[in-house]
Length: 495
Image 1: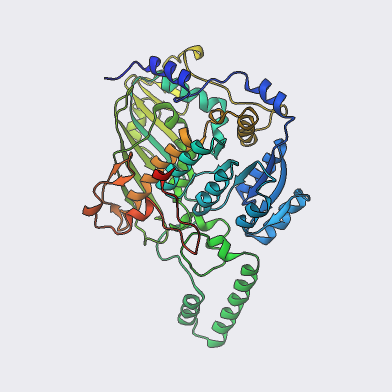
Image 2: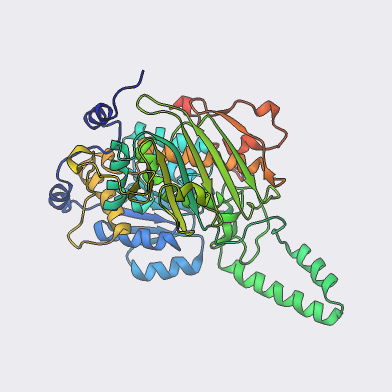
C-alpha cells in the first residue's frame, strides 16, 4: 500500500531521510562559522581537480597537494606555495594525516575509492569527483563508511546547487506532471576516444610501422622519434602511481593520461559514468531512481578493454512506497528519445548535447518545461507546497562549481553531513549504483546490438542470473579486485 506523495515529502523532511532536508538559514550560519579554519588537501589537482582545490582554497587553507603528473604538481604548487607537494597520496596521508581536516579527490575513476576510503577512515571530510566510484560495490562501501565515520561528504556533480535544478526536482517530486512512468536521459558524450582495438605498446607500434612503411630507414626514424616522445612523456608521469589499483599495462603517450582514460574499462566508466551523475541528478532526486531490478543495453560493440563508441541502456526501476514502477532509458553519443515520443507533448526539438525528458500521468517535462498531451503548459505547483531548499550562497556570489564546495564547507562548519545534496549515503552512493549498473549491461553487449539482460538484486549487490550469462567478467564490474599490492577492498558486512 502506497502513501500519499505529499505526506511522504512531509515525513521525509522531518526525518531527514528523504528529499530536500530543511536545516535553516544556511547563509547566516555559514558566514558566522567561517572564522573556523579548515585545512584542506587535494589529491589529483589537474583537469577538474585544478578547479576543485582552487575553490576549496576560497573557504579553507590548502596545506597539501598531490598529483602523479610532475608538471601539474609544480604548476599548482605556484598557486599554493605553502602547500606541501606529494606524488603518492599514501605519503601525504602518512606524513600529514594530523594536519588537514578535509580533502578533494579528483583522480581517474579507478582510484576514487581507495583514496576516499582511506581519507574517511582518518576522519576526514571528503569531496570526491563524479562518478563517485568505478564499480557498484565501491559506491555502496563509501556510503557506509561515510555513515560510520560521520564525516561530511559531497560528490562533484556541481549542478546540484543550481536553484533551477532544485526547483525542477521539487516540482516533479510534488506531482506537477503526475505519476512518473518513464524517464529518458541523454548526452553527446563520449568526446574522448572509445571503441575496439585502441591499446598500443611499443612492440605493437614498431610492428605496425614496419608493416606500413616500406622504406626501412624512414620506418626506423619514425620508431626512434616515437621512442623519444615516449621517454619524454613518461618522465612527467609517475606511471605506477597512476595505475594504482588497476592491472599493469604499458604506458603510452596520449591514450590514458591525462584525459583519455575515461574510455577504458580499467580506469573509467565511459559516457554513462561521466555524464549521468549530472544529467540524471535532478530526476534521481525527484523520483528515487534507485534499486533497479534489471537493465539491458545495446552498443556499437567493444573489446572488453575500451568502451564502445555508442550505447543505450534500459533500466527497470521498481515501485516504492509512494510511486509506481519507472522505465528509465539512457542514450549516449548524441542519441535522443524518438521524436514522436517528445513531440506528442509539444516538444518538437531536443538538444542533442544532453537532456532529461520525463513522462507522467498528467503530461511530460523537458528540462523545467511542463506540458500536457496537447503541448500546453501545465501549471506549476506553488513553491511553498514543494520541498525546495536553496543551497548556501557565499558572500562573493560565486558560480555553481564553487558554490558546491561552499555547501560542503557549510556542512563541515555546521557538522551536518545532510546539508550536502550529493552526500555519499543518501544521494551520491545510490545514484552511482544505479548508473553503474548500466555499465554491466554495456559490458554484456560487447558483440554489438542488444546484449544480455542483467537481472539485479540491489539489496545484496548480486547479479541474480550470473550463472546464465555467456558474457565473462560481469561480476568484476560489481566488485573489483585491487592490484599491485594495494589493500583489498573492505567488506561492507564488517562495517
